[in-house]
Image 1 (cartoon, rainbow, N blue to C red):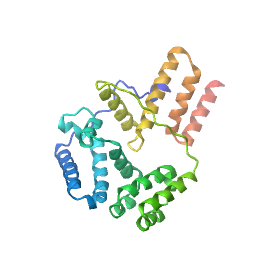
Image 2: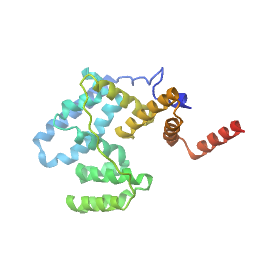
Image 3: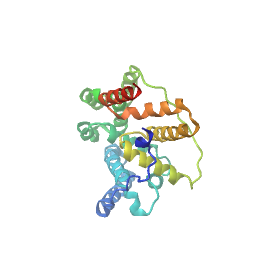
Image 4: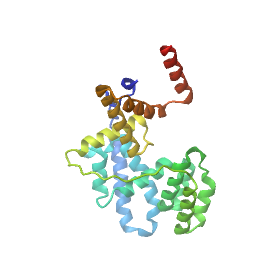
Length: 245
């Protein structure tokens, strides 16, 4: 079971073929938007939404290789030297919101889009975008944020915590490569925190085989079962039962 789901494989996913023409176009677009933002402060929000889409494409296609960089994080560090958080917010908007909403974000602005993305992430397929888009268009930003917070408090969400680690610069490329590889295998819609959790679960699964800790192994397998359907889980249980009998 562990061998089939191990994230550390002898044949890791190959890097996507670098489309140099498309990469050059997207990188140029990003530079134009960043330069444009400095000149036209009033219309900034609408262009930030477009920027989020291009940033997602840079990460998926690894266009940062065109500039001889080692990771997507290094690419962001050059474009957003003060804070990369805003870049990840913009990418979250593009990844979490359905296409009909994204088309209207140019009228709403990225700050309201960020709040919509929070709610969409929690509600998943049950997210009813139409009334929330209407509220975003009609309400001032502060009032809309309060509405989103009220809706989020009505949902049972798992408690979260921000952890900080100190890394040497020589370690960062290894960490980024591991997270990017996990994202390729798990899906680009997964958060970086989720990818890191799966990497750690995979490590614990391997460690449990070495030291004979069944609890660690069981916990790791439980994490992997999230990726299969209910029918597949039942087939696995039935197969285990037949072998046991």
